[in-house]
View 1 (cartoon, rainbow, N blue to C red):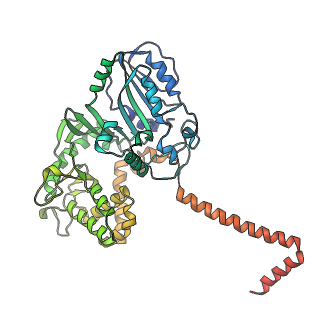
View 2: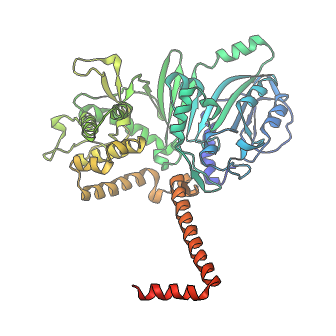
Length: 491
């Protein structure tokens, strides 16, 4: 289930951020449990009967001890969308039969009947094995977050039957989403009284609501993101994952001043340096520019309207002070990551100039004291906007948008090479730190399968027609030969 030592680097994300006090037992495979523990953590690295392990573990917890369970969901959306079941190797395995290595909402209810109180529910994505992000239940419900993302497969080629994120959005709208999340990370307390259960559940309003891990970056850029609640306030922490990344934290602090100089009206979000490995930002309530833009484009009727909206968004995020531009109109200080999702409108800061609110830059990780072509910044902003909102392609194809923006074919090729160079700086030469990229199996599109089936059906039909003619010739050789001669000499 954990496929290599390299992939285990990502597997550690499942609980690296969670603080546990006291003596802890980690269960990753079949074992005999002896003694009592303050905490028992069940994170399988091989297929386990999860319910059986939980039943056995409860009796080895001290009073009010913590039990943590990570497991795939029996009815995970990934299994419907084309990922083979990891423990059985079968497609649709757990959703059509028994698989004790997975659990369901019904199983979670049963766990509580063992004398456990469920105090925190998290959802690892894309799964519990190799989590890139972790969401807490109340964060999803309060902020209307869609946690779903594409799930790669590491054992068998996967079929891409439908868009998991789009399907999850529909399930959220119907109130059915929790039954179909890919995996659960559950935190229980062993409760001995009703009063203890009430006290346990009151303890967890504070803490990590969301975590995103950058394990697959080069070591010097591995900065993880945490959204936390402390009392009635929420914060965003960026924390170095290791000594090598502390210099990058310092660089982000320095970029606050660069961002402040660069823009006419956009404000960089303020920060507080917690220590030499953590920088803290206030959590801003608002609407991300890319989400607002995508919603507006969906309501448009023409390509011209879509172009006008995107052009207006570009004008906003690339509205630099005149003194910041060189003679060719390129910025002297370059925010390479000027993508729309890094800007947010905050309604609390309304102004006469902009009814949408103050526009903030919420990520200034990649700002440099160097001139970059402004067309490259436009190219990059559009590229990632279309990547995150693929439905926009139907309204206005990306190539047509770039052409309307005056970005030539030669420039596109140059900027694509420049982007590849930038990404390889972050993820290592030849993407060597993007471990999942190297181990993931092939993705087979459903649309491609449909075309394959059509071609095979045509081939079979042609064979049947040829066979029918051959059978006719064998029944009446003279007529068959006559037909061949007629075709040959009638051309």
